[in-house]
Length: 271
View 1 (tube, rainbow, N blue to C red):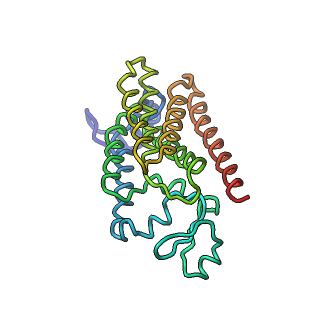
View 2 (spheres, one colour):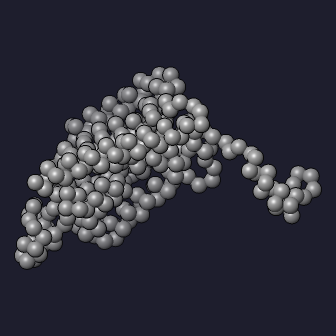
View 3 (tube, rainbow, N blue to C red):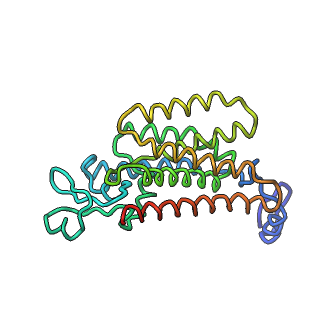
């Protein structure tokens, strides 16, 4: 028996009653989150990958070589690397051949989103996830928030794949973080709040992306656009029984576009 406010109820009665109770939804159709947080899980994954890299050599870790975003192959040898060598030629000369996305290592588009080497790089990215994530999670629900994060990160990775130097490595969650900023901007516009504050923050961050060397502006702009597009689809989807169909249809449509762009770039790099 299950304890109730007055007396007891049988487990079957409680289960049947739950079927008729509507679950609480956020303003944009997601389930109201309670308990564990996706944001904390994302922070934990980023920290765990950073620790793995730290204990396996830090800047010299071979883990980074295999999970960073590398558009086209490199041949690593002591003291440097030779881009574009065939794997057999590389290995015959004592090198380690690292496949790029164009060589079939598509996992790099995703794993690089969770990869940081330096502590400062890690701190700023996870701090932004810690601050922005819970707000978006409360507004969209866990699943939709995760979709914004992952699609923004993937958009940033593919922007790097399209527009960066083919044999350079890129890492970091900043593309996904910029996507969270884009989603906040969409929410501000949708709720007709003054956008000056978030626009200033995004503008300042973009200027930093172009002024400071070693920063991937491609990932930042791609992530910003991807996160804003998914958030816009979520907040402007018409209410009604088909709302989720419109929302997840938009996610699928963007994914198809990203896959097509990846295929075009791969053909260009391998031709």
